[in-house]
Image (tube, rainbow, N blue to C red; front, top):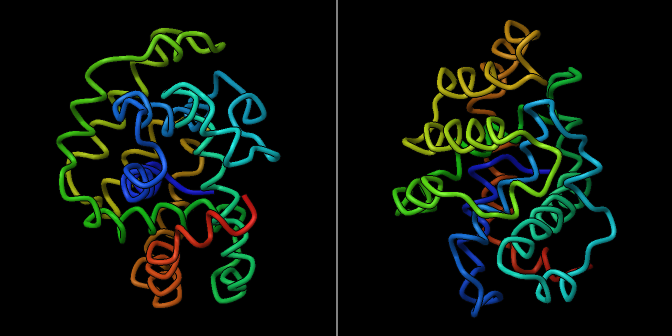
Amino acid sequence: MAAPITHIVLADKVFNKYFTGKDKKDFFIGTIFPDIRYLGEIRRSETHFEDVTFPEVKKENSFFAGFKFHSLVDKARQRFVREQNLYSFLPISKFTSQMVKLIEDKLLYSKLKDWQETENYLSSFCKEEFSFKVSRAGVKKWHRLLKNYFSKQPGIGKIVDFLSQLESFRDNMKEIEILLRKLDGNSKITEASLEFYENFEKLLEKKS
């Protein structure tokens, strides 16, 4: 799995190679929509797919191509992290895998030069977002949170602020902040994140 900044950075990296003909705004909104589940209104099983394939993704309209691409990214990253045995080098916590994703966001933010474009996309909505069992207020909140999160490279404080507004994390923020500070600057995470980014196309095509 990956976090919002990483999903956008990777979508931007391959969009022109694999998704010509798709609407970039709808694709980007689609690819960061699945993690709206962290607001607590919808289950993960309704937004993530274990058996999605690359050909299937390409057949979808722009929003749902991005939506299913999210699961392809998660699958590729999960394989990579497992092959790297990354978590064996890190502190043990029920939040470790999730917090590594946020540290990756911090590391990969600079790989995208024009964040204003993505922020502008989030000023509007795709009709498909309202076809899920998520309230209109929830969809609007998700866009608002992401616009703020994308506004500058996140430090630990900004990550903590983002997570504190998500139902899935707000009751454990003290433990989460301590863990984030332990993980920040970890050389294993830095090496793995940059390698994943650089080799993303090969990893994506490997078993998709």
